[in-house]
Length: 260
Image: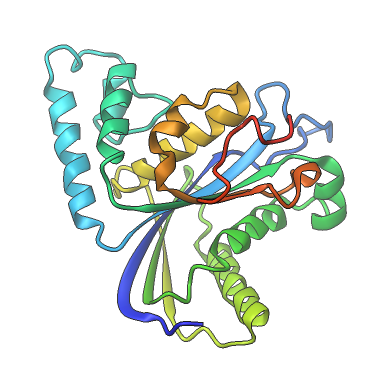
């Protein structure tokens, strides 16, 4: 194993979908009644996020003052932060075009909501289910640079800094066990909002493209930025194992994945 570079790197982490399996009466609702059939966790990584932040803020200033776009109903939200689900189609096009030029690495873990796995492996705990995804996402990422800065998108009043930091620590431990080594690098976990951290809008858009591929079978958005994705793990697509780990040699295409 190579020694870590004496350098900084920055991860921006968000999710798409949710970890909910049951309603308040205990009924299974995964995939129905507006409850997502999958949960996706992913990151984009930048060695230096400052030029990315400036480019995003410049585009935000451009679209919020554009005479054609400025009165679009969605612009109230866009003026705070870009968000793929809410942005006007014209804005979405411009943002995808912007991020397609960024130098970055993106990785994703897709978890199908299979009740048997949720109950048997995770004791029906959403926190355990979610944190296992964090561990999987980061287990091979924290040994490359001496300083790792990890920004997680917060959701409303939800505060997950402490449990997420624990999941990151377990990811490092998994790597050490796997390679019989010691990870001598440092990391910091920062909860943030897209309004406070523009780079989180990049991972939001990337996640939107992955989610749309799975739920709507539409690949065109993913294909546009797919060259940025170094790994996509369809964690519980057991029927497709070991080809459910998509990378440069085995590029992701929804046609390769088992149906939801």
